[in-house]
Structure formats: structure tokens, C-alpha cells
Image 1 (cartoon, rainbow, N blue to C red):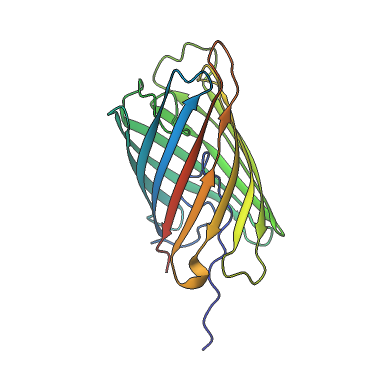
Image 2 (cartoon, rainbow, N blue to C red; image 1 turned 90 degrees about the vertical axis):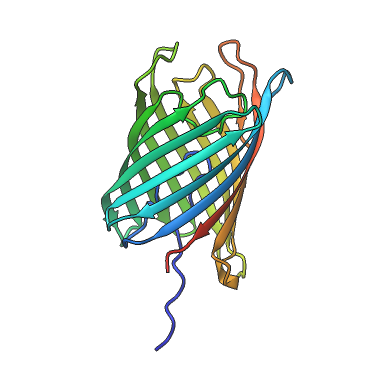
Length: 238
């Protein structure tokens, strides 16, 4: 019997990633992510580094569970947990939709090295969608945050990303694109992040390596900021 082809996972953002693979179809899928990031303000008066380890597990065909522990260069820690529920799979059109909810069990919010995708309030929830057409993929999210004070007028979140896959017969298939993230519970809500991810599964190494260079423009007396995110994604789906 001929070996089945490797699963071609849908490209995923590094900042506004879904809790579990949005196109995951079977229970038992498991992924571990290791992330390092840096954050610097353009006035050079604040900034820091952070590290995070995350586990994602598809407990059933529809239910996904995840947990992330983080630590920053200014000795601050974080612990997030979450769950996802697949609402819709259209295999023919490669369109997928899932609901997500997450809670920050530990959130030391004064950290200057906090992760770029951290929510401003403890509870976050919303929808994630993905649509792949040929070598192009559109990812989008819409949600909100709760259980805290923001100091601003809205606790809405939204994101959109567009990626192009460099597939073909390459031993290292990859994708690249741009992410735009908005979290209106932050004084400076917008993040723009060019992103590149390289897949090493074709050489029997079950991992991907992603790099993003996020930038946030100055708003509400908050200086512009920039940084780098490097993430290793280890997939144990088979």
C-alpha cells in the first residue's frame, strides 16, 4: 500500500493564531510551540524579552484544549488556558470556522516584555476563520475581552492575515505574508507583522519555524514599538 501524503496544514498567523489547528479533523492531534520574542519602543525607554511554551491538543473531533506558560526578562510570569470548538468544516472549499475562549490564570500585566498576542483583559473569546484557495490563504478573527478595566472605550479584538504558500516540490515548503491585529482594549491597538514560516516535515522533522517582525504605530501618547517573534512548532499528528 502506498504511503499517504503528509497533511498540508493551513498557514497560520504567529500573532493571532488559533488555539488549535483550525483545519484539524481528527482527535489526538498534538502540537507543542516554543516562542521567544522581543519588544522595544521607538523612544528606547521601554522594552523587554519574553519566552513561552504552549501545548495544543485536539481532545475530540471538535473540541481542542490548550495551555501556555510564559516568562519575561523583567521576571514576570503568565499562564493561559483555553478551549476551541469546531463550528464548520467545508473540505471542498477548504473553509473552516471555530469558536474559542481563553482565560489568563496568571497575568502580571506590568510586564514590559509581555507577548505581542496577549489580551489586555483576563477573559477573551471569539471566532476564528480560515479559507485557502490555491496557494493563497486568508485568516480572520473577531472577538472581545472581559473581566477587567481597560481605560479605553472598547474591548473588541479583530485580526486578518493573508499568506502565500511556496509549495511545489520543495523540500522546505513555506509560506509568507502579512498579519494585521487590532485589540481596542490596548491604548495602542494596532499591530502590523510581516511573517515567514518554513516547514521541515518533508525531511522527516516534525516541526515548523516561524519568524515575524511586528510593528505597532504610536497612538494615545504611547510610542511606536517594534520587535521580533521566533517560534518553533512541533507537530505530533501522526
